Length: 141
Image (cartoon, rainbow, N blue to C red; front, side, top):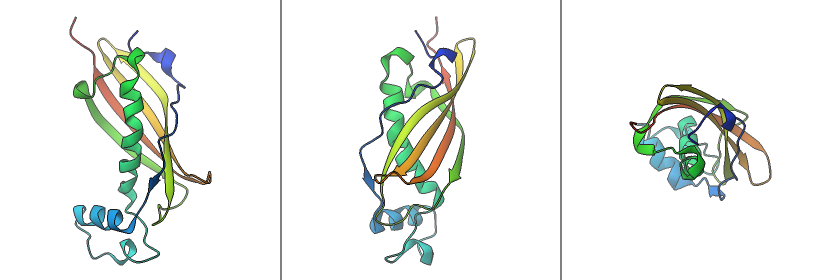
């Protein structure tokens, strides 16, 4: 059965912990064109806000690996992205990501899928929720 409204609310196990390190923060900041921003360096470094996609993206694998949904990354477009922050990601954080399907709208062979990925420290402290809307085109019949 391809993805449908019946899958709303389905959650997947959290990812393995990811350590937010100083070098990874610096690498990401450089990719954003902000290699000299002092917020992204030192023992109190925070990660750029969009660094959260690194963690959220790891959780996507469980969605695409679910055989019941019949999803293919090759037929998926990432339409929208948003973040709700509890606090910044910090150097030294050990973070997991847990994906939940929040909304599904099927229109013909296409499905608009809204997912939320909850990021939390291994101690259970909420950090952020990364919400995405995906457009998936089913296989031609």
